[in-house]
Image (cartoon, rainbow, N blue to C red; front, side, top):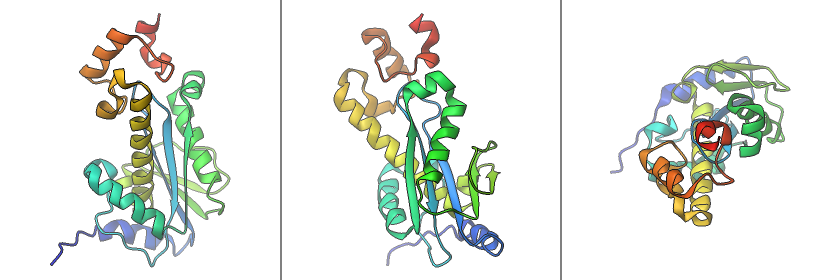
Length: 205
């Protein structure tokens, strides 16, 4: 018999909030820390009838499991949107403001106006709806956890696409993060157009 892992407390958290705010949107980002690539954000609206086995903070789930959950979240969500802020926007605005912009784009792209947006972290983007932040929200709220899956998987797929375009940097291995391998490749091949110049200012200068 298949083993079921349901983190029911995440769904209970959202269910309680829906007594006051019937339509809840979870919002999370992926890719704030890397040296290269766009920053991603996702917004997801679930309803009380939805339960998803294994749904949890995307960082606590294997890549294979995240890919499966990505499809299930999309199939079961009432609405969802994945959005980005570009490398150019990151360099122009700074990473925090670019992340807030990506989050706003994700919520605006839902096509539904939520009664409440639950945002992972301790900062809020400027949204056209009521919002509240939830620290470590992807381990607290099912809606945020679902958003974390969509954002993480979407960005990982994007980095694999960049790997095909710039194979010399091995993006599929480190996803743009500042690993030893990544720094070695930057030292060997220089800074590409998909690198965040403000993150590599000393090298760029």
